[in-house]
Image (cartoon, rainbow, N blue to C red; front, side, top):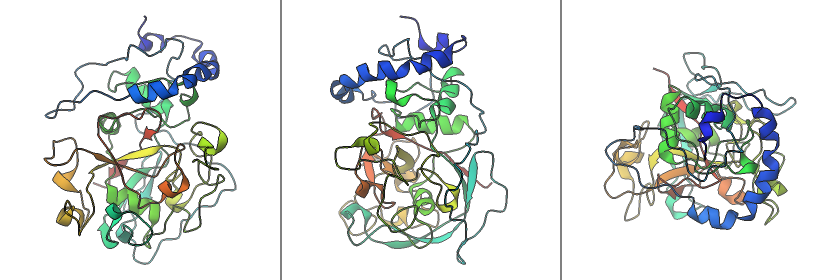
Length: 343
C-alpha cells in the first residue's frame, strides 16, 4: 500500500475529499469494531519526541489528508450575527499584548473553578483560583491545520481517517494527548492547563457553560441531542466556528470534540483519598508533577474538557473532568486546541 503522505503534493486532493462521504458510510458500518481497536500503543516515558513519522497500515489511500496550514495559526472566519461576550469583569486582568493570529486573549484574575452541587465528586470543592492572562486558539485544531504538521513530518497522523471526520474545517479527532502536545509545540504554542481552560470556558463567575447557565441546545453546541442523536442528528462533528461565538470570542468550548489539557487527572481537588491538593491551588496551578509529558508516579490519565458530539449535554459543563490515558486516541472524539503564554 502506498504511504498516505505521498499523495499530499498531488493535484485533485479536493476531488478526492468530496468522495470521502461515500467512504465514510462504509467505515461507519464497522465503527463498533474499529472504535474498540483504535487505541494507541504506550509511548516511552522518558521522551515524547518523534523518531520518525508513522502512518497506520489501516489508513486508506483513498483519503489523502487535507493541506494548507499556517504554522502560526490560521484564523477562521466567524459566522455573522452570532452573540459574543466581550465585556471584561472588574476582577479580570487584560492581556498586555495583542493576540497572535487565530488566537484570542483570555484575561487573567480570579475565577470559580469546580462544582459542589449537581456535579461529580472529582469536581469538588468549588474554589476561587487565579490565573495569569494568556492566549488561546479561537477554535479547535482542524484537520487542515493538523495535517500540515503531518505533511512536514513533525506529527503523527490520527489512528484512523474516518470518512465522516476529515473535512478540512472539522476538528481533528483520533489523536492522543502526546500528539496534541507535539502539535502545539510545533506551532510554537502549548496545551492549556485545566485551570486556564476552565477559566476560558466559565469566566470569572464560574458559569456552567461558555454562554452562561442556560441548558445547551443544538444552536449553540454539537452534542447528543435528542438522546441517541449523535452530533445533533448529523452523526459526526461540525466544522469549527459554526455554532456561535461566546465568552472571549471562543468557539466550540462545549461539544464538537473533547479537548486535551496539560494536567494529570486527580480524584478531586481537595477532600478525597487521592486529592490534587496544593498542586491545584495556584496561582496558575499545573496539577500533579506540573503536568506535561514527564511520567508522574501514581497518575495514569490526562484530562479532557468540554464534552463532544458523541456525549449528552451534561458532559459539556465547564467543570466536567474526564480522565483518559494519554496514549488513547479516541478514536473519533478526542481533539484539542492550543494556548500560548504572554511571555
